[in-house]
Each structure stands twice: as structure tokens, then as C-alpha cells.
Length: 435
Image: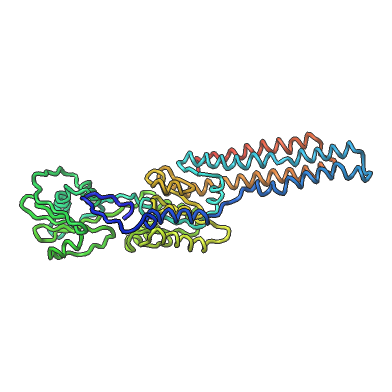
């Protein structure tokens, strides 16, 4: 299967499909198709200048020419008014301060380990209404760990773990590695004989004079050993000693330390809906969602299923809201591209996910998602402050200039002075210490 790594033996492979039908090819196709659908927010200044510039130039020309032609005064007086009107109307404060607000926001975010690939992504993130998460590697560490050892009555849990570690000594399977990492004692390989690893079941080994079997319920049933389920959610590794069941080990992908904080912070920031999409089993997904306080989850999803779910969720957001998706794997690349805003984990994330994303969290902390939203909203707030302040002052002085009340000094202030004030305000976007 595309993307898998062989850890335990030789593979004999028969090719049954051309490259165009492979999983990786399908993922690339999904990324290309999703990028065509993704909406791009236009820059406010571009939209505004399209109408503002020709209007003020025409008004200034009319102001300078029409009144003297109608005998309303001297040409020199009205030409001066027209020139003053043009100086005041110059959109320096908008053209300079608004982009600077976004640059400041991007720079401030980078101080927090948040890489934003463009100003328009800040604007889109500020309107985030729904945040969708991948599970493995995003909300969890992406590595297996022993979370519990449950021994049968009169059996020492350390004995269960030690026998399991001995039996798994020669295995490079991720589950075996987690068992060996949990065992703190020294492993004497001279005690181990006749190791047999059964794919999809587990491993058998002779340790001293004892026969140890470690694996799933299929291995226990094959040996006619009575076993029982565990109340905990995760991968259950059953252990038998000389044909008798002695206990089981619970292995799980551990939730990140700040994952619960991340969900709580998002809700505090005003995010209306949190959703988790995963290819994992239903019980595992449900346990993680309940532990973290996630509103909804979807389990057992393939990459194309995730794209379909995100499209359905996007259709359910309000006209003013946007959807952000957070992921880290190559399978997440199509969804990162399809979402209104894609956020990737930068430290452990795949190259495909980082390339497809609009925002990258360099330290892999999901709690920084809420911080990124707060930075984006602060940036947008300051940008709109500059827009309203600049337009408000200019409108007042433009009226005064048209009436002949404003002189050239006031016009210069309305142009250069307002621009300086707006620039200083824009610099506040770089301050993210308390966000």
C-alpha cells in the first residue's frame, strides 16, 4: 500500500495497477482539483482604489475648472482648491499602512513559531468559524506508548511487561518498540530462544524454560488461551505464559499535552464548531473526541472521504465564516488545500502537507491555532482602524478643501500626518507577547 515501510522481511510484489490509479497519484489529483475550488480573498486596497482614484481625480478637475468657467471666482483660487483637494485625497495612509498591518501580523506570528504564507490567509483565518482536525500527529503525538499494564490476579504487572519485552526483543514493529521502551530493565538475549513472529497476530518466544506468546486476540485464540477485553481504548497486547493468560498491555497514541487546551482556547476565541476527522477506529476516535471536548468526529475515513466531509462542513458554515483544517500527513494534503484555510504541523508534518498548507505551526503545538486566530483578528482590527481613521480624516478635510477653508498645510497633514499615525498604529501588529 502506498507510503508503507517494510520493517520485518522481504516483499515479493506484483504490480496490478498503473501509476495513474495508485493512492499517491489519487492524492495528487485531489490536491490539484481542490486548489481550483479554493476561494482567494481579494485585497481591500485593490478593490477600493479601482473606484476611489478616478473619482477623486475627476472631482478635483471639476473643482478647479467648472466654478471659474461659471464665473464663481478667480481661476487661481479654484485651481488652488483643486490642488489642495488632490493632496488631501492621496491615499498614502491606506496604501502604506494597510499592507504594513498585515506584514506586522505575519512578523508577529513568526515570533510565536507560526508561519503565515500570505496576508490574505490572515484575513481568512480571522473569520474562522469551524476548525477541523486530523487526529494522528495533530492532536496526538503520532508515536505509540504503553499507557497501562493489566495483570491477572496474583501476577505482578512488572512480570507481564518484562516477559513481553523479552519476547519482542528482536522485533522492529512500532508496537514492539513501545513495549521495549516501557521496560526499564536490562534484556539478556542469552535467555531468549526460538523467536517466531506471526504477521498480523504477534510473536512467540522461549524465555528461559517458558513459552511466551504476545499479540492480539487472534494469537490467543490460535493457542486456545482464554483472554478478556479491556475497558481502556487502544491497541491491546495480550500476554500468555506457558499456555496461561497472565494479562495484557494497553498501547495508545498519546494525546498531546496541550491538545485539550487548544480546543478550549478555540471555543474561548469564538470558534463555533470543532470537528475531528480520522482514519482510526470508531472507539479510538470517540475516546479522543470525548477526552478533548471536540464537538464532532468522523472515523475510518480515507483521504477522499476527508475531502468530502470538509466540503460538507464548508457548505454548513455561514456566509461570513470560514473553515480551517489542521493536519500533518501526506493524506491530509488534499483537505488542507480544499479548506478555506489549511494549517499544517511543521516539525513532524510531511512535505506534502507543509506545501499544501497556508499556515504552518513550526513547533507542532495545536494550542497555537487559537493564538494564530487571535493574531489574525488583531491584525484585521488594526487594519480596519487605519482604513476608517484615514478615510474619516480625509473626508472631513476634503469637504473643507472644497469649501476653501482648508489650506495646503492642513492638506499635507491629512496626507503625510495621517499616514505616519496609521503606520505607527500598524506597528502594533508586531506586538504579540500577551496574545
